[in-house]
Length: 116
Image 1 (cartoon, helix red, strand yellow):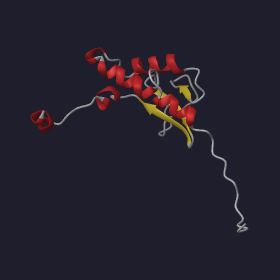
Image 2 (cartoon, one colour):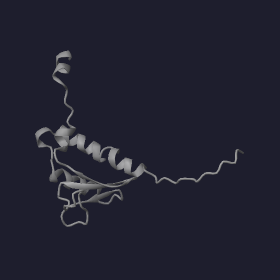
Image 3 (cartoon, helix red, strand yellow):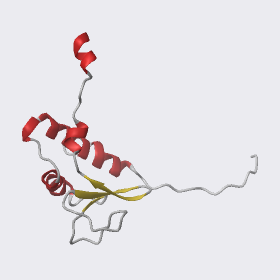
Image 4 (cartoon, helix red, strand yellow):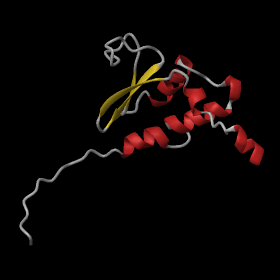
């Protein structure tokens, strides 16, 4: 009607990647939350990545990393056992699981405890 010229941009479906991250109970974030609830028994570092690898090894958006793989960190060093990769819409991103559990634990500030 208005005869405006435009190119149709096709975006890939990102839903499977979002499900890898968020789907309960084994999405990466719910899995991380469940590990946090285990307290001191929570898996950390390479142990946590082994659990991720076992649960998501066959997912097209997830890749196992480590010294024997082709993946490299930004500093061009080989990936390690505590790394995993997610194929996001913008490209592959390598995550290092160093202190994931501590960073994910829900901590309340002391003044919030005082209010409760």
